[in-house]
Length: 151
Ligand code: CTP
Ligand code: ZN
Image (cartoon, rainbow, N blue to C red; front, side, top):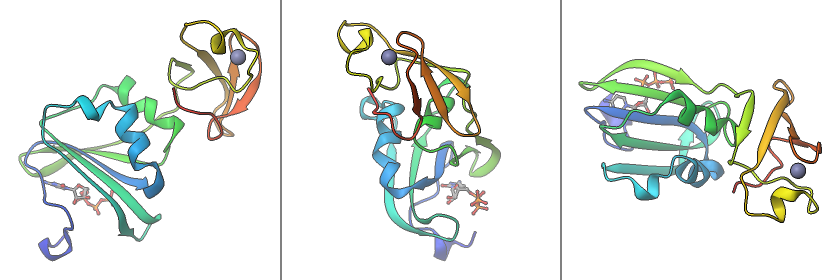
């Protein structure tokens, strides 16, 4: 990419989270707990994108996420790409995989579910990855991954 096109500076080492649907940018911030990050973080949104209309982008210097952390992002933005940057070069592009279960990430949308009435973490089985269907391990209610609220 030519330097003239860079809207946000390149980083030397770290992770560039790209192609975030723009309205999901701050949910990605929350899921990766970037509020408590001590490394430099650049957040851009409403940036023009050929692939998704407007996009968000987040650059975290000197930080590399575990696959478990990366896969948490499947609840908000399954199409995003994490670029691993070493010495200014993109050395790897990681995509998000929907995990088999989600623990403590999203709320059950059944108000009577025990997880909404006791201080305890939620657990969902991902019963249909292609259609994004979750099933609460406690109350068995099925729900869509893009309709659940983050904790
Ligand atoms: N990037 C960066 N710092 C670098 C290298 C790349 O911030 N040292 C950013 C780029 O600005 C881009 C992303 O990392 O947003 C991916 O870089 P690259 O693969 O070079 O861009 P594209 O080919 O446009 O990637 P894609 O096909 O995934 O859109
Ligand atoms: Zn439930």
